Length: 134
Ligand code: FES
Image (cartoon, helix red, strand yellow):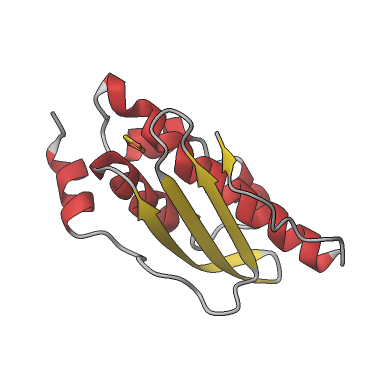
């Protein structure tokens, strides 16, 4: 079902965990299956210098979280906002069609973490409401 690259990312995920006192913090849920992903970011001068994830989800969700966090480290927040799930899937050389929805979590969690970063920076109320299902 999964290609070698996805299996490798699932078996040896990178950037697992959480950043203490993160600059950006985003949690989203997958409306299709109920799985949840949290991404925390360390951001210096609008550049993502570290990213970590916690995913309660399937192999595709874990592989895409690992790959997406690796991809955004070194990007500016504007660049990271343009990262799509399709680009992450391409980096993994494909996912089975029925698992594409799993890759949306990483894209949305990164967006939510950046929104959270921008809200904190602008001293706006930070969204600590219920998990948003995408
Ligand atoms: Fe839930 Fe993959 S089945 S994220």
